[in-house]
Length: 639
Image (cartoon, rainbow, N blue to C red; front, top):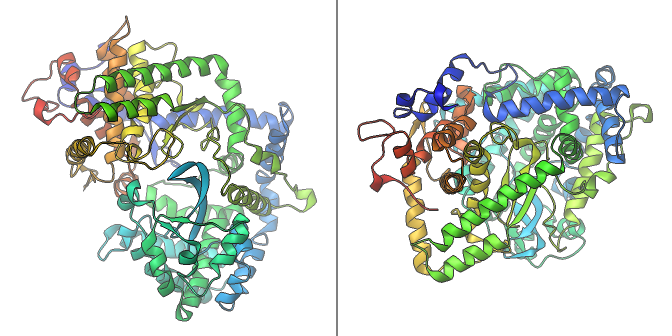
């Protein structure tokens, strides 16, 4: 790898030196907004599984379990495009009729719990997760609803992106309402009222930047306080019915929203809210109907991300079937294409990275002894999940497909599954937390750390070249998957993860001095990225700080691990680090992500973090005057 790279160009731009030739010829497929890195791996998996599932539908591949058999039935249903055309909008009609039948808030209030279980939209959101203060039990969380535009900042006066997106959204929704049987003037009225209500909600929910600060998530309120936030809907009865109990506390992640709920749900606003429910339902469910409706429903998303075309019928059917049965598909993929040997190998690598982290913590010079010991305890208790779960989530055994011959449609099945999923979620309230549950399919190219559970998860899909391969040198693997593994471990000690103890409970385990020092260092990371020019805009250092801290800690630890191997080659280590961030994206997607994504742009992740490591400068002889040079005093070192 090293001999093909212009070593002098590295001193100017590591990312371009490694990826420049690829960038010149790489083309973004019409139904994508990116290509390279993570996307290429996803595309490879899609190709493999689509071929396998073609055999499954043709009877050449036998389902290995009941869940896979139901997946096969559902895939057959979503692939029956003739039936979907014949059904037209009929499957959507019962849900629209249910909303149209509302004459006042009382009509909604009388059926609110069932409405939520059915998966119909509400002007607030309830969900279940680990109690942030007591991670052994599941708690009820309450927040505001999702807005039509990507972020509340889009609703600010003179936001140029909103001026471009809103007309696209309104035009798409007009078409979808017409396709669902509404006349144009009625459609336009509904859209006007719905967007007016959405604008009323916007000031009271959190922006992406505000939502990225977990320290402000935990706002416990009593059931009375939540119920008293509106006199138009009986939230008390809905909540106690949903969870089959009476919660002493509900965690309001957006307290300002509930403070404003009474002003949002007024008699004057009823018609606007009803239109908002219709808008959300048509927007959310049209893609499961005819192909024309599916394609129309992608217009707004494509405008946001810069995708030139909708997915083909065949690929859309694959997306829908595998997305609905994601853990079942993940189990199949993990066992067939990853296996127990690779699972063990990567598990060993994770343990190795945890041990490197422990050693670094033990030798840390800016943390006090008490904080160091608590940090090491947190690593000792860290849950590690690699490849795929030991068993398929029992939830999927409840998914029973009603076939076309039995009168089922794609939408009726999906809504049945939604109800099962919602009932399953609410039934968790006040139950012991299951840390073994996966929140990502094994066939997803990604990884995550969950602060509430203190676990790190590495699905099988990411565990392939250039991230990881038995054919790559140890230094290349550490520059790839090693850095990703250590990145996820570092999340336990970023500005958000550091708020949670070894059990995943929100609990300050830092001394005052150490905490202050850590926040000074975190502020250095904010400043390092804040305002960096990219895609005609600027990076938001506060929005991206937690991911940047994890990148910095992850790369630094992976580097130490690579240096501990007999075949160490730091040249290969840094080059593979730059290679895993290889990406070409549409300008629209880049600009959208700068507004809402907690990750910095891929190129900056590759280039900025290496400038914090002394070994980068010595490996490539980067000197003052070179563009990639950063003076030692400006290098940000946290973990």
